[in-house]
Image (tube, rainbow, N blue to C red):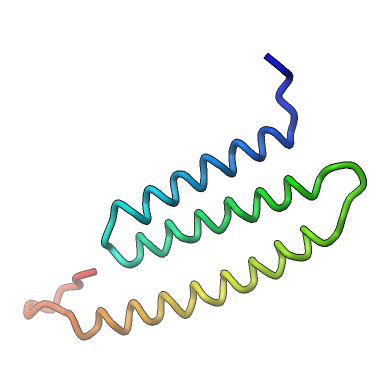
Length: 100
């Protein structure tokens, strides 16, 4: 078996994370859980980009793309959570409990 390099480990971890996120997206109907699964998939893509940018001399483009992607993912996650909460405010059961 060839030695396990850091790039191989990062790539395998990214594939595993993406698989977990894809499983979560396809197996649940709960909106917040689907959003969390989507964020796990996005994190896997970021990890893969950082791992690919590690070859030889350091190329700043993949790292800049990841930083920009993190900011965009954070803002869209915040907007999605607010939309989910707003949608679920109108779906409260008669007993007043939360039904997510």
